[in-house]
Length: 543
Image 1 (cartoon, helix red, strand yellow):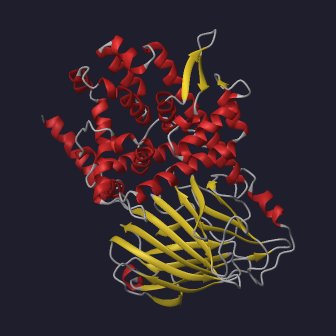
Image 2 (image 1 turned 60 degrees about the horizontal axis):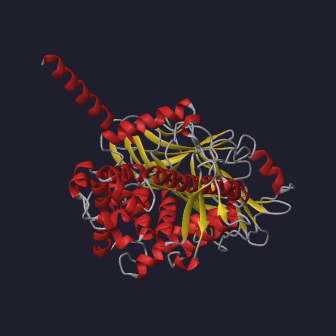
Image 3 (image 1 turned 120 degrees about the vertical axis):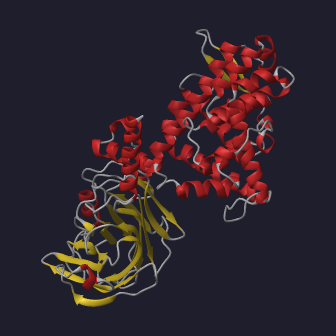
C-alpha cells in the first residue's frame, strides 16, 4: 500500500510540476504588407511564464530592414512603455510594464518585462520597413516570422500574411512555407501558414512569397531573378506527404510529449470545445443509435466525421460510395479467371444524383479503359496520371456536403451546427457505436435484414466494414448472402477492392498536394529548406 501511495504521490507531483512548467500555448502572427513594402506585424503570444525577467523576440539578418514602433499590450489591456534602448540586466521589478530594443551587430531583440509569473497573453506590434523586395521579374517576401530555439516548444503556430494594396490569389501570388510540418493555403486574399503537430524546438516558420509586378513600390531593390531565390530556398526542401516511420527522433519525442500533455488535459480543451459545438455534447456522452444517419446520406455523414476529426482508413468515403453504387445497381461485381474482383458499369442514372458520386463514377469508367471493366490496380495507375483531377474531386466532397447541410438548415453559412444539425451529428456518432457493439448486433437477429446493406455501407464509411460484414455473416450466413447478393468471401474481396480504390484516391491527392506545394499553390509545408531568409534568428521567449 505504501508503495502504491508513493507512486501516486510521485505521479501527482509530476503532473503538478508539468502544470506549473513554462509553456507557449500558441503563437499567432499577422502581417499586413503595405504598398511601399513595409510590413505591419502583430504577434499574439499565449504563454505561461515561470522564470526569468523578460520576454524577447530575435530578429536578425535584417540587411536594409528596420524594425520600428515596438508596442506591447498584455491580457489586461495595459500598454507597456517603450523605453527605447533595453538593458537585459535590469531586475524583473524594473522591467515590469516596460518594453524596448536591444541593438546587435546583425539585428535586434524586441524585449518586454514579464511582470508577475503565471499566464499571460501578450500582443506585440511593430513595423518592418523594406520587408518586400523588388526583384527583376517579381516582388517577394522572404522572412522567418517564428524563430527556432524558443524557451518552450509552442503547441500551435499560425502565420497570416495579407497584402493591403491588392487581393492575393493564385493568378498573382505564389507562396511556400518552410521550417515546420503543417499546411499552407490562401484564404480570402491572405496567405496562411499553420502548424499541424510535431512542432519542435528546432521548428520555425519561414515564408517565401512571390508577387506579380505592379502592386508594390518598395525601395528595396535587388538585381536578381526570383528563380535564384527559389533555387536557394528549395535546397533540402521536401513537400511530399510525411511518413510517421520517417520522422526524426526529435519529432517522435515531441509527439510523445504532446500525448503526455493531452493526458493532463492541458491540450485537448479546444478540441473538446470544437466537438461539443458540433454534437451539443462530448462524443463519449453520445449514446448508441440504431437510426441510419441522415437517412442514408453518406455525403452529409462524411462531413460530420471530417469536422470531428475522426480517425479512419485512407479515404473511407470513396469505399462507402462504391458500395452504395453497387447496391443501387450502377455497378456490378464479378471475378476474373484468377478469382480477382472486377467492377462493371451498368446504368449511370442509378448513381446517386449528386456531383460527387457521378464524378467518381465517371473517373472509374475512364480508368477502366475500352472494355469498361475496372480491374485490379487499373484505378491506381490512372489516378497517378490524373492527380490534379482526383485532388479536385476530394476537395469537392466537403464543399458539396456543406452546401447540402446549409440548404437543409442544419448548419449556418459559417458552418456552425444548429440544434437540428447537432442532433443529426449525434446520430453519426451513435450509429458507429451501434455497429461496433458486438453484443447488440448479435441480439438483433434477422428482423433488420433489409438494413444490412446500409450497415455495411456505413461500416465502410467508418472504416470498420470488415468487422460489420463478419458480424452480420455470423448471425446467419445464408441470410447474409441473400441480403448482400454475394457470399461472404466475395463480399470481403469487394470491401478490400473498394478500400484499395480509396487508398489510390488518397495517394493521388497527396501527390497533388505535394506538387501544388512545390509550385507555390498551397498544400503542405516543408520542414527543410527555406534558406536565404531575412528576420528571425535563433532563440526567443522567456529569459
